[in-house]
Image (cartoon, rainbow, N blue to C red; front, side):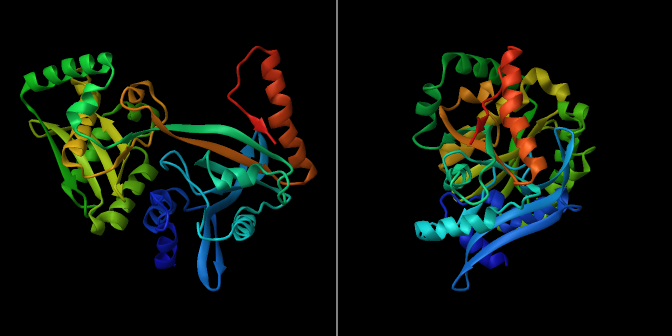
Length: 358
């Protein structure tokens, strides 16, 4: 179904890369080999007009085993969603969403990292809808987005003084060393030497301490290799890599589509921390994008980290919607999660993250 699938998501602007056939096939092979896949497709007059990439499995929720129906996404995914063709009528869209998001009485539906200002969110929170009696919302990501327009000098000149002062110190220290070099390399196959360099950098990063580097985390490494297979021929996958005297120091892995650049992974060698390689590399990449005007947006693929807020005031906001089935056990779990626990936290003086119960 690759051609039909990509044709459908291709009508959206920007194209949702995490829902593309290439991304999902890479993601599934790396992270969902033991999951039960349930990819729902809605057709109208034999034309594909709706898709929902879902997984089903048994997981623990507040220590209670439940059957979870969830979107095919995780921390590696910039976001996720359910897609319906924008040209459908309002009634057709509603019917398509009913089919794509249906949750059985014994299931919990987890719609993870979905756009907060979307038809999907509004539909799921609409209690008049079928099976939406027990639904709650939790915050997810607030992702900084940097529009690439105008010239670099004007953009950088408008950044906060503290950021500019800090970067100038870092750049002076970096250039004074004289041994660093930054290159962009298009990745077309998994046997390119740069792949081993990315793994080496990641193994020497702080992520190695939590087992999330590309060397020790087999799933993350497999995802990288799968991406090179699925996107390699397109020329849209590249690595910005910093080296010092030939030794790999830092990288940003980029996936570009429809004028949007997604830095889907970035690591740096901890032993070079004094040179601020991550900050210098990000500065270099952004300057190149503005100077070349080769993209219209740099989508950071991150949460609202303080250092990124210095680069932009524009954000993409996401949320997580949980739909509980109508069985007695899941109704009780819903009331525990969205009624009881928030009250207990308030009584204990804790400030919970915003939960909304419908």
